Length: 268
Image (tube, rainbow, N blue to C red; front, side):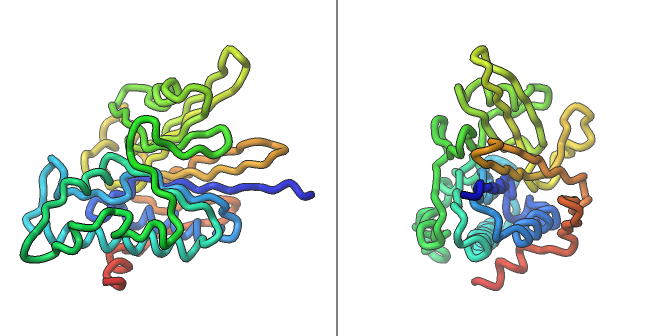
């Protein structure tokens, strides 16, 4: 029997809609479209929707419309990926931003139908074939010897990848949450080699991380291969600030001109 090769793609921190670098996300989506017939696992690793109006940070005056724009953009993304990869195992892992849904106000005059639904109902997880994992310590998606969860550590100077690995006993780990790409590898006393990745995602640099030399702010996502014969082979796709393109296997993937809001408006 031919050795089966699995291909997992993980995206995180899209922070739809206003805080998303749409063109960088567009580059990643063009990659998924190119490899859709080879992708066996597709993981959205948290902070897919921003829910900025429900956060503790500065807000726009038109919060109701902003929340609707975020919801419509997210609806489109889940539906698009489900249709693109119908045979892949699809997993949505909540991040801390996704949990802001619980802060939605129930408006008695307009929009009440949006606020009274759960995220699973709103985004049709079950209908579209998405497995949903709530955000909490101990909740993660396991793929062979690797755990995927959004992560909870932040900070500019901490070796976050190492810290997340230390928390995940016995497994390698892939996290998100920090808007920059990091990698750590270590060998246990038993001889087992474990690795930790964080992927930068697609959030805009609204906090000017890129100006701080020790922040290592960067965008990106993960591509993982696995076979019984070779085990895991992982790649971190990195994109430079305001450069929404990358090269993989000799092919250029670009998101120039991509606007997810225009896609979201079409499904209202």
